[in-house]
Image (cartoon, rainbow, N blue to C red; front, side):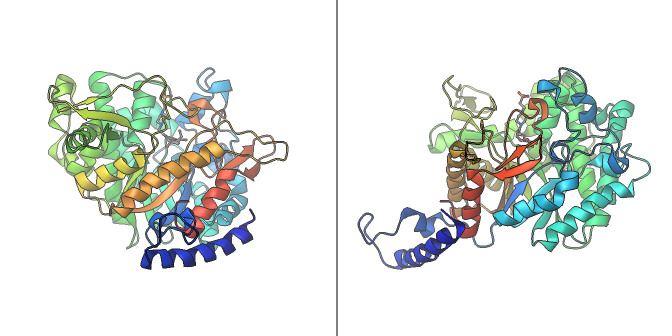
Length: 487
Ligand code: GBH
């Protein structure tokens, strides 16, 4: 269906929807508007639809304009760490192709773009002298976005830690890194917030620490345990809090600051009041080291008790810094665990084991569970009274292959998105204050230790030519945005 035809159809059905909301029509029958016309599928007015990417996953140009090495350069160049020994050396060459990539966004009709800033472009050694040429790239990108009517939302840390900080301080193992992060954040905020009004400090504490410093699967490839691990976790949230303060001190008035965390989500196995209450308790504990301490200004009793002598060392002042008030909470939502009420357990819940047959995307960890996009924001709103929530990532990998006619018919991704957005709609309809949604990702890109094997984009990327092709899911998303409704 061409865009033109569908817009016309839209006007027609939109009229019918107005009618449907005032006159009670029979559920079925000739007078019934088609289901997609139902006003009950609408998102709140002004909802911000966007797409997201991250620096190391798309930029390439790793040695250009004075960029220093990051832990991901080192890691991806270590044989055996990434599938097919792929690296981000070139990736999507977004560093050079950003103007045409902004046009891709424009043709989707997105209102906002979430990108990340590569710390080692701005401070090649992490601290010390800045490299203004590195920041210039983001100045050009921001100007290009604004010229095309797209709001820039900037993430200051999406895992590409300057290698020098890893070498000198053990990266996030060292408190020096938290301090360096704040200095870098203040420096960038002072220079971008005349145009960038939304900042995310850190992307996914729960991923880069757990996968990079505990399990050794991501950079820097460490397997810390005990006190060293808990202290590293503490330094990550401390770095966030120090950065919030530095950004507030340096930013132009009207700048909003938050984070983007891949909260571990607990969904009630069945929606009874007892299981819902258990899911809320579970959610607090499962995020104890990250979002919970950031929101509550203290570690949960259960976390400290379980850690025992390995509990992180901190001062009351640390906790104050970590819980510096935020303007919004960003959450990356992909999947959920299921829990049930269980009074025999210390916190009153237990996990319901996932059967082997539970469906998942090609990324083995991505269990398809749309209710994550209801319970995630609902827990954040209910437990911590968050006033503004953004879904900073949601999307899925798929085994995309262009058909003979060149189209990429990713009906699986469309179904995934439709199901998840239906659950998000349920949340907004109940008044959960979700202000926007960023689809991961604008285009296929470097999927960390999976290299280029798992594609998450709504644009297909041919890495040999750098050609981008909209997938069926891009057409779907364009309609969602145009109608501000899930269809
Ligand atoms: C997000 O992480 C990231 O922010 C983004 O950069 C990424 O491209 C996107 O999702 C899709 O993956 O190999 O067993 O250690 C989502 C949360 C945390 C899920 C790390 C994968 C690694 C699993 N991710 N996890 S494992």
